[in-house]
Amino acid sequence: MPTDAPARTHCPNCGAKLHRQDLSLCAYCATPLSLGGAVDTAGDETAQRVARLREHPAFASAMAWTPPDPEVTERAHRLRSRAGILLFAAVGIFTASSVGRGGLGFPARIPVVLSALAAAVGVLLLGLAAAMRKRAIALPILRRPSLVVVRRSETAERGGVGATVYFFTLHFDDGSEGEFRRPGQGTMYEPMPNGTTGVAYTRGERLIDFRKL
Image (cartoon, rainbow, N blue to C red; front, side, top):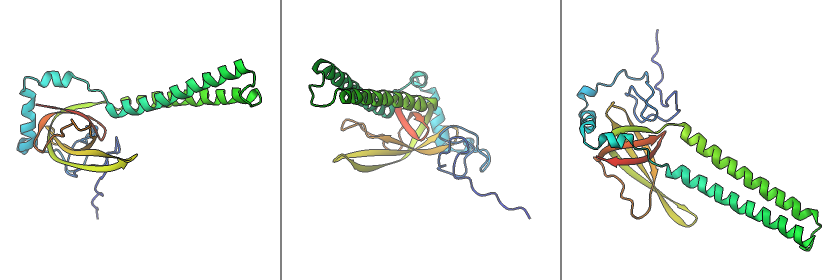
């Protein structure tokens, strides 16, 4: 007697957790899924509303635009800054030991070892920054007309400062739907309310940017 296949909870391609079980496309990488068959977008009023965004005068320019990835840029900048400090310290230690000839109160070889260690860690951090950026951009940015269905937020304390992360459930014109996260962009950032339409720029489960239309 045949048994029903277990419900698929994650995308077989990108591994993202599926927001709904009745979709034919993964909302995070657009991979076709074998879940509940093809979604009837002809009867999906939300999908039809989103599809009409393609007729908007600014749609073509929005689809051609590539937004920067602030999350990746910030992490890479922090690593490069630390690497710069270590490399600067390595040069300083080596220069001081060379000029002072052990005048730092250590055997002459110890400053050289410290200088080499600082330089090695600095180079390692530069390599980590480059590798992190390479991994991030390996996953393409998807540009799709979408509608904000639900918005929620979570606030966590980091270094004594509250950091807010927003989560947006987005509905696309192909009928797919998923939840995407985006860190708060400061006090001037106004997160999109429910019902906002526009072009969403997503990379995996992250919302890189959203251009309202």
